Each structure stands twice: as structure tokens, then as C-alpha cells.
Length: 118
Ligand SMILES: [Zn+2]
Image (cartoon, rainbow, N blue to C red; front, side, top):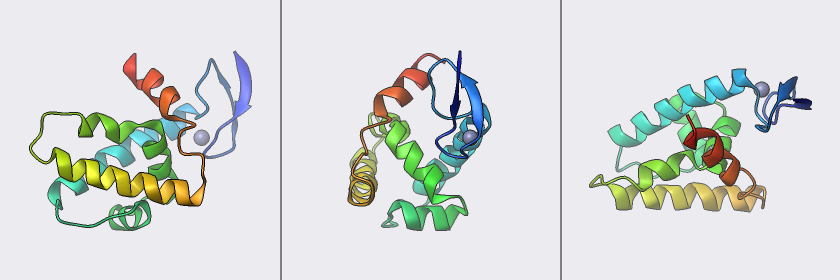
């Protein structure tokens, strides 16, 4: 294990790969649940990450990280009726991200790896 600094809170922690510390990871899980619930309850809402963060009173950086990690992709690929709506939202989130940082792909494979094995 090596020591690196967390991408979110910048605290050093020991890791075998993930760039987000266990504490932030736990928080991200909670933020993800909130965001998903909000999208489910407000299917007509037009959102970008900043508005969504505002609506659920969470840090926009956490939401950006979730999008980068591909967490919302799993919802999108489900058999739900509102698939198209979710895809739309995801595209909006992604667009918003790439406009801001230009490195939106960085965490996708990592996120799938981390959460695929749980
Ligand atoms: Zn952290």
C-alpha cells in the first residue's frame, strides 16, 4: 500500500488503488442515494450538477466525482421506463463536466473497478 492524498478532501491515506479515501467514499454513497432519489421523484426537472447539488444540499464536487466515476451509468443501463430521461440527464451532467474540467473520463474505469467488485 502507498500513501496518496484523497482527490476530494486532500487528506493523505493508504490505498491499493482508489484515489478517494474511505471517508469520502462513504459520503459519496450517501450523496449518490440522495441524487438518485431526487431524480426519481423529480423526473421533469432539468438539472445540471450545480443545480442538483443545490437541490439535495450536497457538495457539487461530490456529484461531479460520482458522474466521473460512472455511478449514474448503472442507473441508465437498467430496464426502467425512464431510461431515456436518465440518459438525457447524464449527458447534461457530462457536458457540464467536460466544459468545466475537460478531463471527465479520468475516473470512469476506476469507479467501475471499485464498485464492480463489491
Ligand atoms: Zn477524502
